[in-house]
Length: 315
Length: 278
Image (cartoon, rainbow over all chains, first blue to last red; front, side, top):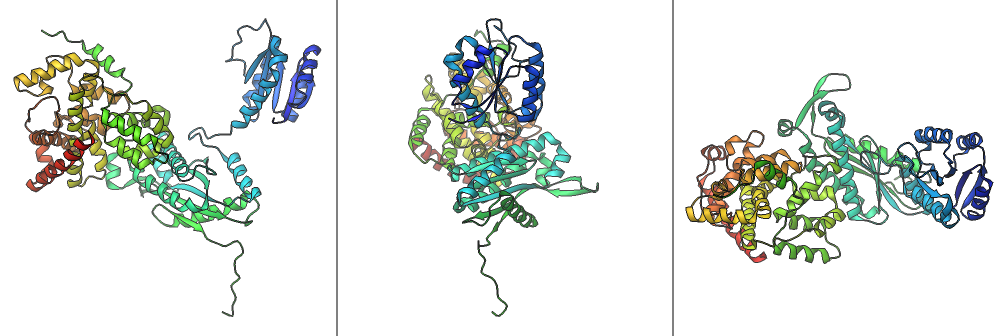
């Protein structure tokens, strides 16, 4: 079972005693009976789970809701204890993840706590547009592979001429293009290698995927082909026909921009070339810049060997 | 005199449809494909684009609000890439078969397949960028007939008998039984399902190509493809009449005699492979 830090907040010593006994193996338990000191503790320590005995306390509800409104605490699971007096709680105004009846405490608490932990483990920060995992998961996934010595390839993609498209057609149409890009990468990468593959959305028009190095170039080429075929559907018919749009440059001058493309930088990571995720993403970013020099969609691969044979001047 | 359903009821009955049934041969092929351990997107795409009901199902899904780009995707190959293997397999599990008027349905299915081939060929000859999208317009142009057969099979059967007896088109005979034509009915449904404008317009105006505003070329192509396939006698669109081609559409396409011959030869091949699959 996953261990986590649990804060129990209840003025009732019978309840806290039975929780202490029941949850002895569930995690690192802290018990606080006073509301204000409990919240002081939360702001300083941020536990993984808060078990809160409500007892109709409106001040407690207010403090809890304002805590949960801060995105920093969005991942803190709250399990609320309810009694006979709380028959129909209004979940719109009570921001908790789960509840348990006081009468079922001894029977159910262990399972509820386990479920809370496993649920928050499954929840990764996702990009609201594409529902793909974001930066924290991306970095964690890279580091995991580096630490375990798993060979992999990472592709870092972004769109060419996305900004003028967004400026001309508005951001909701820009969002549509972001969504299809995420879907294409997800389906194509998973189709190539379902195990060990990962697709993340850094934000904006930047995406990352990781997979078995032997499939990466094939997968990237498929993403490029699919993107180039589908993206014209997102232009107005006359722009699609002419193959370009008029939009403003960063300097504010009107100029023509071609239909969007996708550029991908690829890094192959084998036997101890890198130790930190930042190194991998920075090489990928360099490769992406090289890919971008090509006017059309395309990819560039880092083929540097782990221990390059030094070039000598003598020949 | 036949008692017609009022237009509001008709429309709400049409819009309440959740899925269109297919023909038995398609269902057989689905079960064969689903049993393969490593079925690929290409194979699923081919299966889907050979059937109006499956195509409509896939396009409805990818153009739904859930995916966040409604009205954008009108090609099966794009839709399959965007939906992905597991979603498509899930969608195919729920496909059902027509219980009633099976023979008519198979005839309509053959007619639709013929229009798919003819529309694709005309689009290629005219140098359109996405001939596949135009072929889908051909595949789905008579979707309204499927809907009417499904919801009002007795009345539709009578309309077909009347078309036969009087030697008129089913489109003309429908007027005696329904407050709207199969073109209107198909249009309501695909509009409700957020299909892209080129599909909405070709379905709506394939009998009146001059009325199309946003997809004039595609509508003209589907209109002419429909007449060519009828002239070839491929499938059964609900009557045995070969109507006149709309002059505006004919002029717009400006097809040479060779082009027509070419299309007819290809239809011959398509017809024999279609018959094999049934």
